[in-house]
Image 1 (cartoon, rainbow, N blue to C red):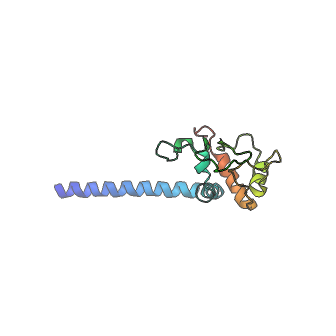
Image 2 (cartoon, rainbow, N blue to C red; image 1 turned 45 degrees about the vertical axis):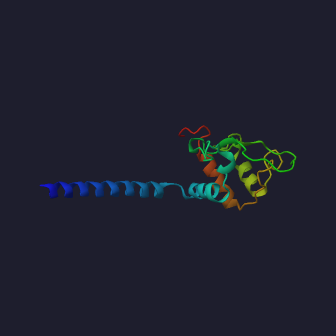
Image 3 (tube, one colour; image 1 turned 180 degrees about the vertical axis):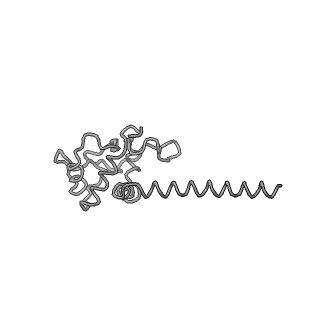
Length: 147
């Protein structure tokens, strides 16, 4: 009797693990590859969250406020003209037309014909990378709520 219960419990656990695995595989397969590429570039290459996401007392990014703007935690050793004290909210890219945002990441020049304020770098990305990043950022809710 005990071995039957153990076998049933093992089967249930295996079925549960398989179900969770299949759900994660199907949801990732169903996601937009361009948005996933943009997510990768934002999180792993450009590291946008380091400036544009607030941190907790331990210096960890607050994921619930991902890319929603933050006070910069560092300053230059010597004065830098136009230094930004705060990184803006880039989740959702409010106020940016798609073409202007793509141009910004390709040329380093914003819709107002100015470069970004330091410490933001002037990126010179390919059109494909810039488009992927813009589509990813536009897919995010500017307030952390689901779109």
